View 1 (cartoon, helix red, strand yellow):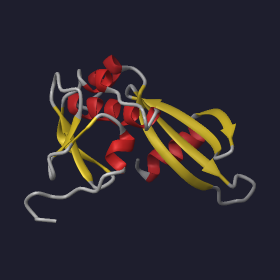
View 2 (spheres, one colour):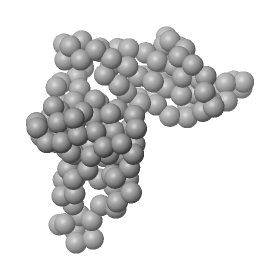
View 3 (tube, helix red, strand yellow):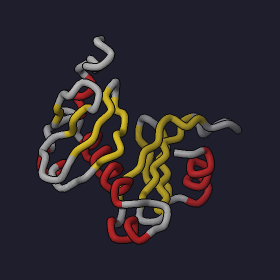
Length: 145
């Protein structure tokens, strides 16, 4: 997420709710929802705790010039993996096509249509949950690590 997107979400986004981790602001742009969590709102310099993206409307996202189908599928897979880190999600990965690897933990991940897992392009390991990805170090086959 860019600094501008974070600023736009805070200034123009919908205030979602306050949890122990801070206030959440959400802004939908081009079919993608940007969520920003802000803490320390009592000062003149609030702290951005974290942020992420979700697919709000797949058709709008695919119609937007900003995203291509791989971007939309990458956002969908990342969000699904994060929703319940310990739960395997093969049915939510299977319909996605991610040909440009994205990074989670040490791993560079991609998936092909019909595969119920994401695969690390460096070590070849296959994963069905975020917990599995983050609990295993990448051992790059080519680097011999």
